[in-house]
Length: 381
Image 1: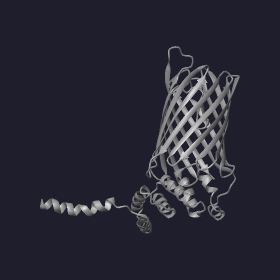
Image 2 (image 1 turned 45 degrees about the vertical axis):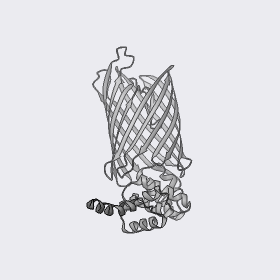
Image 3 (image 1 turned 135 degrees about the vertical axis):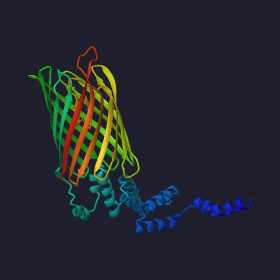
Image 4 (image 1 turned 45 degrees about the horizontal axis):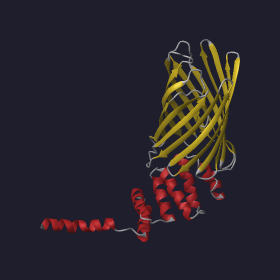
């Protein structure tokens, strides 16, 4: 009994402290002390306790945002600076670090935030409203198989991104694909234009046009594809609805899709994206499901894995950048990518993809495997 009383007296102060509310004055004072000492993890923990209790202010949000920024969790930092901005829409420090957070997390909203910076900050960072060439990229892919009637496939792409303002961007890509099938050469030069417009920090509208200059032997089979999409980005979550229409010489394909993604807390920036697509073609319907997962391995190295289930005949993805209209449709796909950033201006991409292909017009469901090896460069000016 005597020992039980001693234990009760020992734990009573701890229990009482854990149940006591912080209050604004104490939370503000402690977060400021942790900020001055650079105790980022303690600052983050205390800030979350205060915010959950309804204790909040612009300066506390700024300190929490900076703590997340210093620990490398740029998505969480951006969320805190967004909330700090609700207290003061004209705070230049908040807007600058909101821009840095978006830039370091790879968010497409970084240009939108750049437009909100003061003229002095834009000049200091070398940010301009219009850039005829923001970046250029290139890609090469070799696809191999063990089928005697199908040669290897070659794919080349060169692209240019232009900034038409702080909220509007235009990407133009020029690509070429070829393959020999049953001794007949298929060639397909392509042109794609993708326009993106950020209405605000939450909603983005996309439009795309893709032309296919397909030629099989001496016969031409041109195709035209149009796409429209609306996406939202709220805190850690993204949602998108899209629709596209492909008119080719012999077939018309309609595609509608829903996509959702999220980024987990932490400096590894683990993210997941899933999409469900419905296809309508030749009075038949089919569904395609795709799942992507990625993370930051180190400061300069990212990896991403993906899997796609369904018949991909005339399926398009990445805002219609890629159109899978080969003679033999893919019925299963999985792959892994690595992206390495060399400084601030150059990144290198490597990718391996495994496809299961169904031989066109095969009544016996004959399949073969295809292996894709891709490499690319992106140079930001």
